[in-house]
Image (cartoon, rainbow over all chains, first blue to last red; front, side):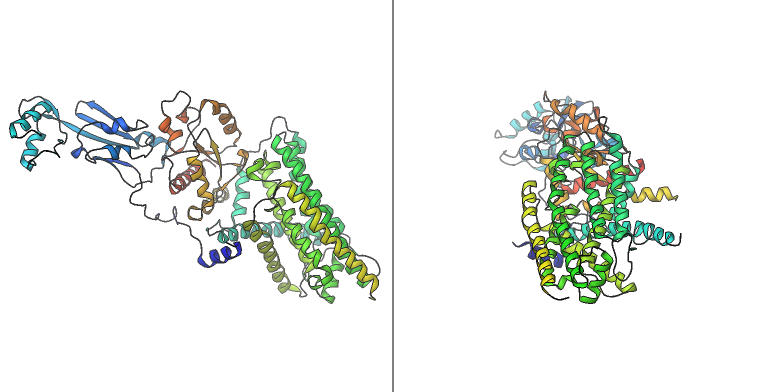
Length: 168
Length: 324
Length: 145
């Protein structure tokens, strides 16, 4: 295009500039891969996200209170693999991109979560409050059965499902 | 003693010194803002070059170990001083006429060459290979564009001198006075090649794309100015701001001085300078890309030189063959 | 406010930026370039301009995970930048190594070698995020003037 017509078009239209940082920015696209968020209530504890994270940003660690989830955003490359491989979308990308921070806050830019320990309803042993992986079970579990399943340790969960009827 | 005070006022306040610096910075600010708008961006505030200058005053001044410090720090001082002197020689028609002792076109062209030499000295004394490349490129550009400006000066001097006397005149005051009575040289067909040659000369002199080869940022890391920081760099910015006023003022005085006096003449002069800046510098630099040094060198030795020579020949032939 | 404070306020409106690419994949460098060239994310509004020489710079943007080969030259270029200056680490590579974290050839995190002031995570960060980081850096630089 002739640059003179470009000049006239630009002068008539005015600047195309987004007014950030002097005003709130334009809304981010919905599917923008931004900050990672973690929902401990629906996490299954499969640790797939830790396996597929290419930069080792997601770490699970067994603590006294349960299974701790840590994602350090200063080494996350925002690839979305964790969201892709997570079976329940417990870890997912939001579209928040405003992560700039001063050096003093470097290690506080992280997402933490905790899957707490439980005491098994059956055997009284130690277990984790992970969401059970029962999407393929037929007939589907009712909410009460789900709560019963959730309160048990892994061995007792197997016993519960076998006692229920058709194997899952 | 009686003509020392007006000279001091002219040198320090108007049209030299403060006024030239303020106007030069305003021209550069307008150039950056309008260039941004032409590109569809918002652009910096108009006073941005002033902020740049103030900031450079706060930075630490450093020189490389192997640099020749005398020349390294003398170069910006010489350039800025030459430009502060040159602004005294540029007439503003109807407002300021330089004293006949100092108003001479040849002296002005000589003074206009000094900033280029200051850049060359800066590049060569900085002991950096990028500075050396900038030095050689600046030298090539100066050789390229000094020819046309000298021929333009001869053409104008011939035209004005032969028409009003019998010998070429190089006094800027006489050139402006001639145009007041006979109409601006911009409308004189004999001078049109010289006008076109001047339109090529002044972007090259001011270091504007497509001719900003010595100070090419992405190629030679700013060439001659590579090792400068702090107040020394600020002096170079002052030099280039006042040079803009000098060169554009020269163009206005040579080809299109307004026939008014007083405040209207000053306002008209400011409008003319802005127009020259925005059309010849801003629109040109936004719309084109940088040339290579060999392309620019060959171009200047072909077209502007030929056009200016054409004007010289036409001015000489027409004034010799025609009764005054 | 004294005259000096007022002058410093004016001076803080002209921060010049210099980029050091210490082994980056150029993703972050492209985003830095878009902040200057693309009309949507104009960085010249803040008074910034990308300068070609380290001696002219006030704000240093460092991209890349600081490979072993580039460690020496990067330190030398960093020393050439006159004080006062502010260092911004762009992208996750300089902050922690990013995706190259346990590689044998990188020296990230760079705050072992350079005094970093602002971090802008992202791979690459959005140009608006870089603008936000630069705005934070300008505020820090104003303190140091």
